[in-house]
Length: 88
Image (cartoon, rainbow, N blue to C red; front, side):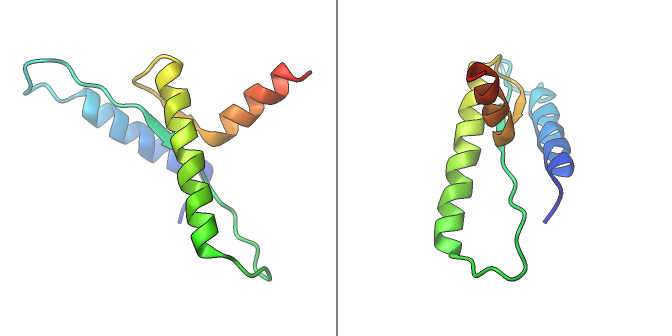
């Protein structure tokens, strides 16, 4: 349970930690996809559907991260922001 900014900071710390591993014979790096959900208090939630939606969004953000330079962190909202720029 955290904000979008904190989720991105946590993912960036994980990315940096993976990137700092130097005990292997080849370099390693990590790409991470992040998504966030802001619950509405008086709304009934289908947690199975929500779980599937969030997993799908994080997966799309991960592939966005991999295809846009690797070794980075992307939030699902970046995809929506980029798509809105394309549609203008």
